[in-house]
Image (cartoon, rainbow, N blue to C red; front, side, top):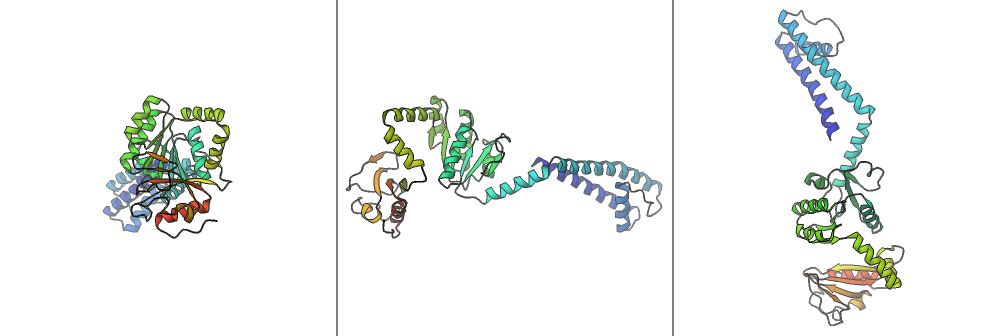
Length: 335
């Protein structure tokens, strides 16, 4: 907001000079209106005659008002013209609108870094109907983006606050350096201890550092890309099926994760007793406990506990019915 501060300082200085001149002329015996009139005509160099005859003291005071006031008026006029000519006001107003838009957002994802990885992340978020706020320190990168953006250093607490870190669903640290992502992770974790943080890493030895700094997940794009390419070589059909299920929004078949909260009516029941398949149509593929361990292909006798995450596959209506069942609401009958 440097432009606003500069313009505000110039206008404030002009008001202060006008007020000081008015008070001075009142002390010299002018009425308040005449004092203001005399000050304005002096500062603006209009050149009208004095409202009242000036004593020697009054002349000295007027000289001071001319020197200080005219200089201040010219400076203020220059700042206003410069701001208008350089299109700064539209830019400033646009930033204010953007910040108001971000301030109204909740449950969004903050993407720190608008490189190739950041763009890919945002694209997937949009495909999954999730709002994203992008932070980057390069103004050229942020031109014309469809997402709310913030120009600034994502490692600074103030920038994260303005991005709505206390209302966000998650944060992705996707800067180009591991050190930058480490600082983003530390800052975000300090501001919001319960925030879900995913951090990018370039060097494998830094993965543990990012986890210790507070990242919930650490992702090495090069490693994942290599593993995916190898999977296409060895199991192309399985790999492509998983890609379609996870990323192709044009098909209805979905993989979904459903956390089991405390007090859920199915907590403590087996998959069979909860009638998950019969009541929702969704197929439970795995359960993940609080410690991160998976129970894959669970049998019908497997007990579901609060705090676990149910990983299921099915049609959107099936998965919606599963979420309602876990939440204690009456699930809609699957198709």
